[in-house]
Image (cartoon, rainbow, N blue to C red; front, top):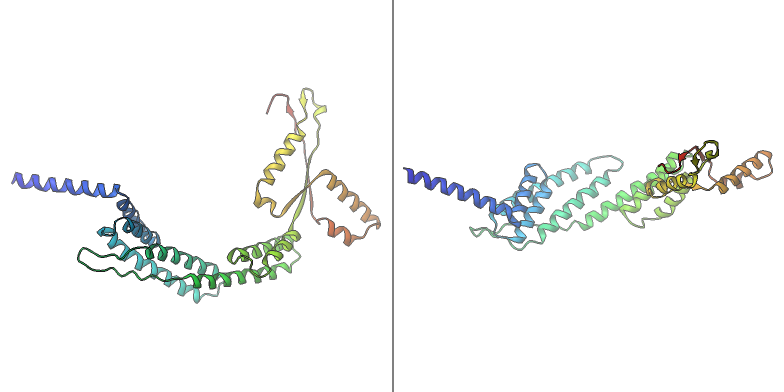
Length: 287
């Protein structure tokens, strides 16, 4: 009885040890990650990791079992989603259709690289892959057109914020299909129409405080640099120098007297000029 018990314990320990060793191998680790993904409902990642495992060890039984379940579940999930989108009337539904086809392409590309997979019993696992590149191209064109038309609609507004969104729509159209129609030209037109010109300068009052030194230039450089280094901030923003601001103020003064043509002034300068005045005093040697 004791001998039989020791045998059972030994076999159990060996099984646990072998399972641990499998998890430490590249193919075992990939299969384990895929299995966890499958249990979490992420069938795309499960199929991709199962394929990764089988690329290393085609005869690995656990990965063979996983890929059959995950690949089928992935296809079913995307088919259901595409059917729902086909019946949808959402304005930008093609954005989601593009995402679905991109996901399908990732999965089918990974599975399509596998050699023929045969189980220990001699069964050939059928993994029929499909080329969705034409579907993706067609969906991308539809998505680009939807955003292009939205850009045209929004561009008719005189509201600065709406023109800004119009520019973004044309930009998105070009991201779905590079060079789509004249989206790049229209984007630049709307971007310029929506741009804000901001003048930033600091009033130096350092002489009014004993023991303090001027730091206007340093502060100015830091503010301007932080803005210029943020591409999202400068897409619709243009910083003006003191000289440019002075010229605008002079032209505005002249325009009020009727000595300049208002339309000419509006072409050269933005309707929106933001002026920021800051007082900054730092004691010498202090930050």
